[in-house]
Image (tube, rainbow, N blue to C red; front, side):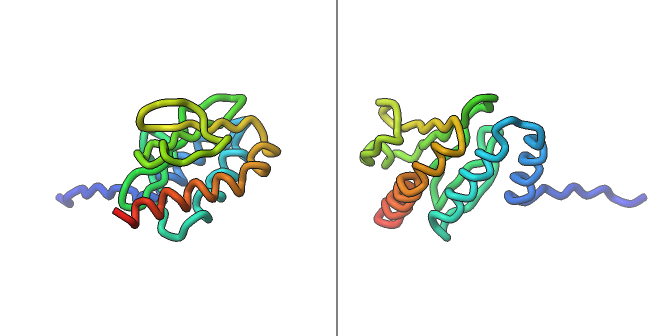
Length: 129
């Protein structure tokens, strides 16, 4: 009798599987645009599933997509250094995280530079540890 082996999906395979579940989501284009911006912000970043959503890390967790909504996309920045970064894009006065909401592609495009800068600052902070 052959032994059944189970193979765990790689991080990227898990993300691709997750994205297939969003194929009919009204904000799919916005999620994909944000993923592209995040991934291109630093070659050091990796993508995986955390909290049942795409998440980005470099040695430490940095940002994760928030719970699904039909009318906006949430990014939860949960790296401790985020509280030291000043940006109009970041919302909340939490002791350890900040939020960024996007309602449409126009908002994403207008905040692309700021989002990229935030990610670069977080990666630099991790490198300085």
